[in-house]
Image (cartoon, rainbow, N blue to C red):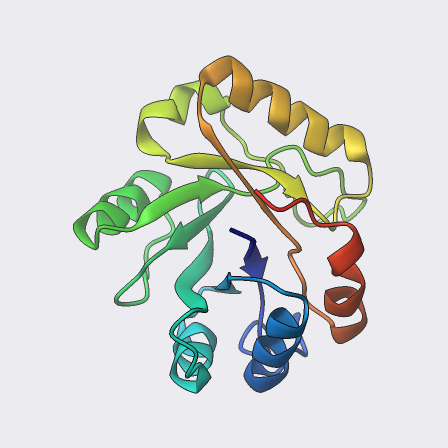
Amino acid sequence: MKYDLHVHTHYSRCSNLRPEVILKIAKRRGLDGIAITDHHEIKGALEVKKLNKDKNFEVIVGEEISTNLGDVLVYYLDKKIDKIDFDEVVDEAGKQGALVVIPHPFRTTFIRKRSHKFQAPLGSVKGKIDAIECFNARMLFNSDNRKADRISDKLKVAKTGGGDSHRLPFFLRNRHRIHYL
């Protein structure tokens, strides 16, 4: 099955992707499903899910949460998580029966204000997460993805991948770069 597990709608301030466009393009790309993971919001995911009338196409309601340790993707949410403490996010996800994934744990960035790298050793959170994002199409350096892949193998943690799409041109272009897991 082919899923893009990291897509943002215009409900994330940094994205301009409209829910109806995301759904149309994802189906045109031949995907079996997508996870909408807006920053601190699930409205976009709920909107895409409502627009989807295809029972053979899954829309996963997710959220990307900036925690005290770094970003976390949470999948299969019933309601938005309003916490920012990593352990509290994990606890709330567990109460909702949701999955917890560490996205882009080694992302190199040149923005001084904020690091996108996960701030704790991944081994220290192994028992609290379900997977590590080992392919992120927005990585500046492929070595960042390879490092995530190696640590996932070492820790024996499941792997995910996604486009981390925020803009239409990138979402369209991702079809060639994304590794379907």
